[in-house]
Image (cartoon, rainbow, N blue to C red; front, side):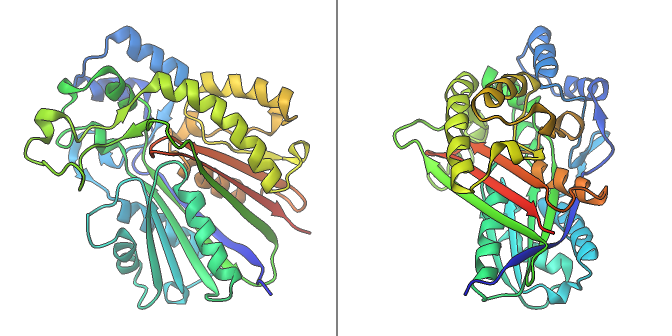
Length: 359
């Protein structure tokens, strides 16, 4: 018999003070790229991001945090909320977009930072779907009875990919440059426990799109290891075809949402908090209209935090969930639903998670 799983605590961490648009423009002017001012302002307007967070000091970018340091801060808040000591964690799952080092795994670095003497650990690298995968792995192992307590830490430190010394902005193409004006950094953590549940958590994952080109990728790596010439060739830059991602991604998101609702057995009209992973108010308004008409998801249920905290991919869902919990929401009987789409694989990745408050 599978053991029930409950959320015992949540935590989140946003590095540094919020950076508003004026401060962001001022900082980016010191690292100019090829975008003209009109396009920059259009990106800022269409995303709707008013403030964001970075894992480095804008006054001195050499002073920076890491995935490990951000994950540790979020994890300690989740442990405190759960009433656990670090040594009580039996399973540690850490997700990142880009790990802190090629080796050892970032999960072992977080284990060290938290002072967990012994535990099973996993590192998982992905973009927007990483937190959902981390939750799925941890919850599944708890349900099987292999472990009793798990800590899932999800950290996104991605801004460095568009900034020196990693990047060479003056050599970026238009698509590579635009991504610099969207992303943000942060971390979140969830403590899961096997036992009598007060929450019902289910996660659905799907990889599709065989034969589709990747919407986002970084060439540099084991398949293209020429580090010495990477700046000359631009292989360290994030490659993204934004027009293709928008055209293909919006259609895929709608079909994926349909399957997620079916697989997770969710009545769209019952959703109290709908927290999709989106990066633009322009896209949000379009999806709100489409999904209200097709699925009946009420616009009042949408919860969007990216305009205030910046675009954090799937980590943004867990940051938003932590903020809701700390405000005393959601209440018993309510439903939280999230869906994410990831284009950074050779296959398109989609994920959905539903959280039901029992009682």
